[in-house]
Image (cartoon, rainbow, N blue to C red; front, top):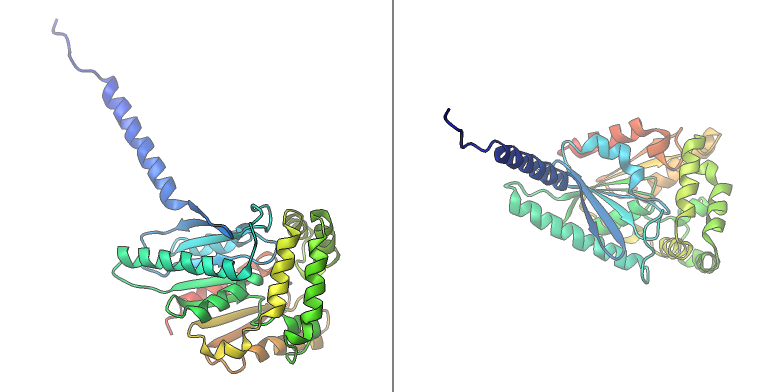
Length: 316
């Protein structure tokens, strides 16, 4: 009998190693997490596409999980960077939180990712920014400061200046709300996370319709740092983008929500408030959802994602 000198186990072991290596490489390619002082980023989606990168920025006391429905809608055709802001909804408490530093770190991140995209692609695309609430304000701020980086902005229930939301008039300025801003900051500095959740619970009707989503919002508030929240609100009340908004080069879509109001006159007043802030901006469009409340991604995700996909497809 002729004895075989083949060793069948080695090829099997080798093939298993190759399969394992491929699986790990694929996983790394589809989900990368980057950590910064003021935020973390999870990068997912199609890294081979020549379409623009998209950055999703959540709002006050929210993390990147609120964007899951939108992420599922756009990730096949775009590389998507999902931001979670430090100090909001279970993120690590930041050291010396600053909205300006947060904005600057986001600019640095977008700049670096844009450079990587240019190095790996024959097509150079500016980034698309999509933000909810505070995230929408940040998106508009970045587009104003770095027009060379941003082609389009979607601001979900967020305005160039938040003050008129409290007063009902676009005549409101940061100077007229400075005392209120200081009181809000001081209040949050002495607040516990439980108290922050209770405060959110008292006004939950303006945030979402369904009880399940309301519980999620309250839970995110309870896992947020009150001082960070107070600093963020203080910044929004003291910073007004309207005077320089005509300088924005990016196309701007503002998606507003007026479903928290029962009568049509109030809904119409809110729509006029939103449109009034961008009245002199030819590249801005305002669309209102009269049934949804502040978290449009919870109340009417299909409408939201339909608006987003149509806007980012438009080449005009």
